[in-house]
Image 1: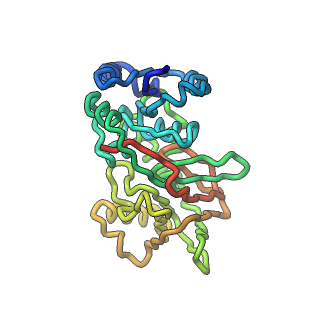
Image 2: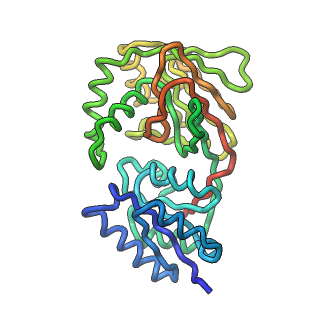
Length: 295
């Protein structure tokens, strides 16, 4: 008889160096709560372990020890398995939303209590590439160009300072292709320069881009910033920090179960801070398909 156990999927980039001690604290705390921890640094080893039906049945859940990307990876590889973020990444948007701190004892208590909540997932499709689940948001436009450049030059851990050079390069070189946004339930497409599609109301740098998004309503919240050009983008950015964009006539917002974004010239897309490729892209909502431990 296999005792209840918890898999800890460690992001080698995030769970290293000084942050390694947080993993050891979590493992020790889980043992105090009669849950056996198993830390996996290699993704394929966790997949192999879960092929054993008896071990799978005894699994309490998977801890994503990294950033939002680590949790998204688990959601894609192990659909239907309850997960819990352990915030070792840069933004940790989901952990902040759920109120789970970088504290081994606090996280172990959440897992031991076993309180679960179902949330929606997003599904992003791009060309012939296999569709990918996402947790928080996707976008097409300037911020996706920043993400593309960031990952192109990435050489290890990412910090907020890592965004400076990609932002400057994008500011000088991005051409703001016009985007056509087509959604279920709308009679005509909407044109714009930047489209942000949110499942959760979180966004990088705590920007309230889509603060009205609900992660369990079966819908995605889509915001279309219509005016093009660097000057307009700078104005939009300033407005977002003060929530002045929420009622502007040139910033359209709607909720939908699916939205398609196209452009005549290729425009970059991203999901949860990872590059997705270029338009055309489709975002769909998968109601209730993400199960997370909550305090």
